Each structure stands twice: as structure tokens, then as C-alpha cells.
Length: 400
Image (tube, rainbow, N blue to C red; front, side, top):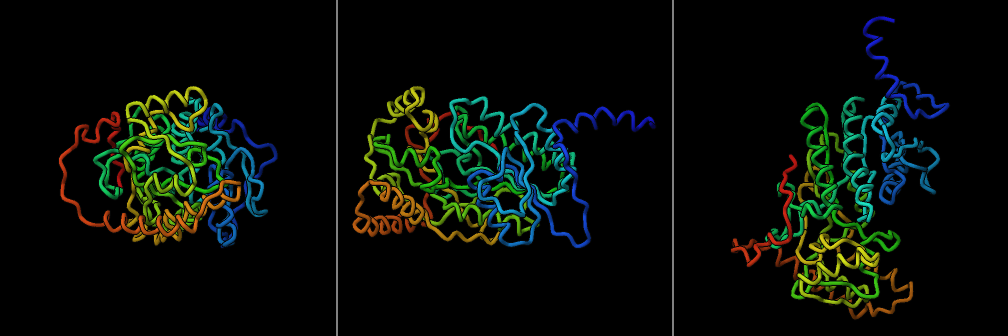
């Protein structure tokens, strides 16, 4: 063994930890289809994206996740990956070196607040750090990363529509969103270290679907919903099919680099959303509402911790013009249509709602709000809390 080989041996042994028994990397063939590796490809959005991509028949797809999704197409291959295991960076590196994907789509992560904040942090933040570190060593040249529009923060001084140039000002006390901010910083650092790579960060508006049993649908379908007295924030709701389309459009755009908001058209007030779900609200003064939300969370009754309650107080509405222009993204469902679809499914579950009476009112309200928000607004002086009392901001800009 030569001297360089001796030096490389310990690293090679470290990188082969957790190797799948019997696995043999596919030999590259002339004219082979491009390959995409998808972490979290068995999750709700990941499985939907993988099915849509497989239906095209133009990509070789390998899913990196704990287990294959129940309805994974037969042509999609699966490789085991658990980002919470020790040395997961070595496992990711080994898989990427064996598979040699043209594109890595990173969707793995926790999409609802967990009471085990350490576990969520290790998966969402440290897991992303490990994935991008392994991608750099494996010389992956294109990466697509899942993020959320919540990184902008829900704040009283937010503009009507938040563009990709807006700072990330999420409250650092909100561990769930803070992990997403940290993950984006890992993406930014990777892009700086690897200027030859193209990194697209997709900030998705909140997804909503009746069959997706995350914390948002549980809040909307609860027996009652906590709200804040005197506040009725405008909300965006993204249909899962549009979220999947955002991923497909990004994959189809090799030059895509930087941050893109994947958001629907239209907005809907929280009050109208709850009305369509037939869920009565319990309005409390905002100081008491934060305490009540945190107490319910600690008691195992709430859907999110108190710090996350900013999003039922202040707006966090993202603009989608950049994604339209660069990616050709065109959402097919408005926020209102997405809520109506989910709420109708709720009606079929036994909650009686007169949609004929509510739908026209909701549509007119949404239209008027949209027109009002599109008007240029004069700068306003900060209110008593200047929008800053919502918590300490994690003000960070991701290059777009």
C-alpha cells in the first residue's frame, strides 16, 4: 500500500459504516437517465413528489428514508437512511458516492412541533448540516432544500407580501421554526464553500390537506381554536399538489439557485378559515393567549408551543412572483380553494357546515383582501410594540 493510500484508509473505513449488505452500485450506462436522490422521499410531500416524478419516466429515482412509502412506484429504489443515528453523515456520503445523483432533493425533517425539541433539532438542523456536508464531499452539484415561509417570522410590521429579499426574523424562542432558520444557514454556508454548486432553497407556505394530520389541521379541526382578541391575521394555505409542482418545476430548472417562495395565490383571514371548518374560536388577550397556548402544550393538549402563537397574531404572507418568473411555477389552487377542499372533507367526517352560504361570502372577502393588499401602502409608524414584541428576531438573509 502506498503512503497516500495508507493516509486515506481510516477515512475510507469511516465512510463505509452502515453499508447495506449485498448492495452493488449500478454501472453507468451510455445515455442513462439523470438521477435524483430524495431524502425524506417516503414522507407526505416526498412520496407525492416521487410519484409525480416517476410518472414522467424521465428520471432515475432513489429514495433515502427509513422505509419505502406504501404506494411507491416499483421503479423507484429505496436506500435506508436515519439522520438521527450516529455517523449518519458517513452513511449519506457512502450512498451519494455509490449512487452519484445529478440532483439531491433534501425533504427529510419534522414538519410539526415536537415536545422532544432535541430530537427535532438533531433531525431538522444537524441532519441538514450532515446531508450538505456529505453532498459537498461527494461532489453533488445540484441541491434542492425544503424550507418554510415561517422563517420570515410573523410580525406586526411585515409588509403585505414578503419577498425572498426579506430578512428571516422568526422568534428564536420558537424552536420549531428556529431549526428551519438554522438549516437555511447550513445551505448558505454550503453555497459559499462550493460556489460551483447550485443550491435552491424552497420556502413553502403552510400546506393544508384533510388527510395530512399535522398540527395545523388538528388546530383547525379541534373542538375550539385559541385566537387572540383584536387580531385576525391573513393566512396562506398551499395545496399539496402545488407544493409537489413547485419541486418538479425546480428540478426542471437547472439554473435555479437561491431562495424561492412556493406560495399560493390569495389569502384568507384566520377567522374565515375557522368559519369554513365550523370551529368556534376562543379569543383571549394576547398576553394571556401566549400563556394559555404554552400551558396547553405542556399539558399535552395544545398543537404548538406558546412561542408559535405569533402566527395566529401577526401575518406572514409570502410573494410568489420570483418562483413564477424563474421556475414557471403557477399554483392551481388558491388559499381559499385549498381550505374549502379540506373543510369539505371535514364535513364528510360529520361536522355539519352550510358551504353554500359560506363559500360566496368567503370568496368575496378573499377577493377584497387581495385587492387591498396589492395596493402600494404608505410607510406607517411602528405601533406600541412596533411588531417587535413578538419575540427576539433571528434576523438573517439567505442569498437569493
